[in-house]
Image (tube, rainbow, N blue to C red; front, top):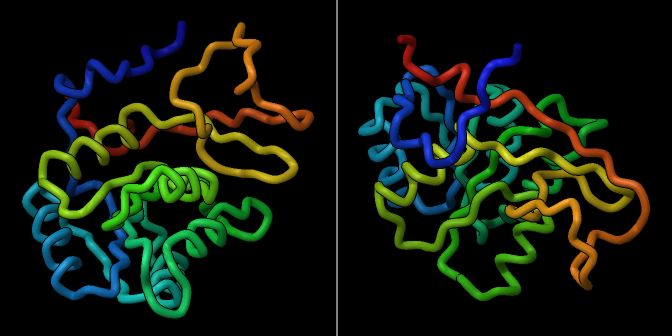
Length: 193
């Protein structure tokens, strides 16, 4: 008898202990990093690491092994998409399943698609609200998407609605894909009792 997997509608019933989670915030704007840090600390986080560009973010990622990364799209040296592609290398990275929440001032469909195709877990348009950030974090904790490995992609399943009987033009093509289920962060972060 397996344990019950939380349904997205259960998010309001699960109490998350943010103090058990380690965050990495990567943004070239000190002001934005301060806002996100303040929000995370307001949620109860105690361990929030920061970096001001992709290179520093990659170093911090490898040093601190965060549970969740919150990253800006546009940064010097290399951007949030390049960072995500580096993290989503299962053969060279020890933590390729880490949820990545991308922040950007741009909401064009081509950007959302590019972020999805780079392995971004969740996408947020600035300015952000405390409620929206909390909901994105809760989603990656309580209802993580399975990961997909194909010849050309490794990352969270790009489809949110899975219908195994679907046969239309949007059906996944290109040969075999492996579906990798991951352990939900909810086990680490939920309140006992």
